[in-house]
Length: 398
Image (cartoon, rainbow, N blue to C red; front, side):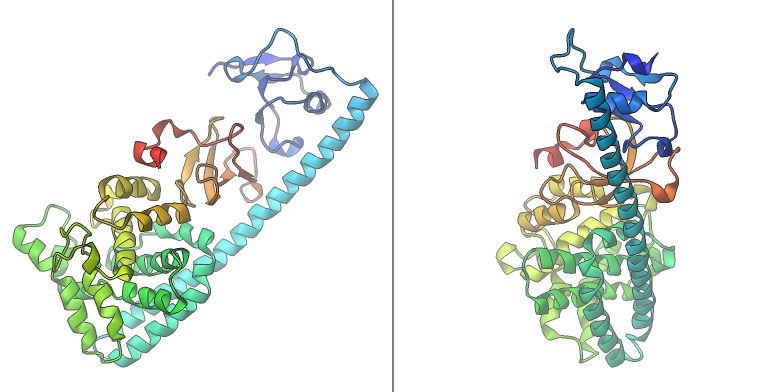
């Protein structure tokens, strides 16, 4: 997009401009914006700039401005007031971004501690099953009380993949946490939320009996290999029954997390009315996380595209309301997603606006802004939004 250099004295309402100065040397939240008031013009003219960049294609240019410019003295007073307001807002956004980073660091630490616990639990399941199950229950209660309550922050962590030998641990932790979050948003009881979390934590335990070369195979599996892999749900239940401490009412969740509403799933080919509702929750999250973290890392999808694929391709197979709630919970653009805005800036989605899914809160990238002071901006319809030109049709329709 071509830009012209114009004098600050030539700036008019409706012009889209870029200030050729460090972000720290002006009060505006962005270096690029459309002029909407005489006060903004007065502030720009007070910055002692030789020129500003003018973008005709993004500007609203009219022959005559219908607004009456205030008297000079009055305008300067209003501009000074606006400048103070902008500076306060800018500083508040910087502090918000810093606090979100601190919260994210705390949540990430809790996430990593959970990873250590999972490795210990899985190592004990064969030799000390009672202790393993007890530790798992304690861990799920802790996650339910802490991490799940930090929804917007923990969603940043789901894209963490980990080393190959730990991919199973990352997967079960992701599925467990997201399943509990989804169950909470769907209105499940606290008891059922924790039961779902516990079952999700062990939903793939049966894969410990599947040869590693099959689990890590990146090319298509043979028919016998597929059949053996499908046995992991039954293997998991058989293994957990040996502990004699695992809740009996969690077995169906583990056994049915690959069953589909249309009867095309496994191991029993159950239909919608036969599948446990708690298993349906884990099934949705499991499919989503498998798209984000497949065995072949080159085929991994971003959370945004994984949800698009899920909603488009799994209708009739997974519970529609549960998929819709997952999208509402995570937003069309999940936290951690890098997006292009309509003014061509790049940002990182920090949190979801559940009332307006297309307008999340975004941390703005600007090479002129110190990384730890980058502002968090709430996108607004008609003003600043995400460039949806590449948005999948299914998500756009939803």
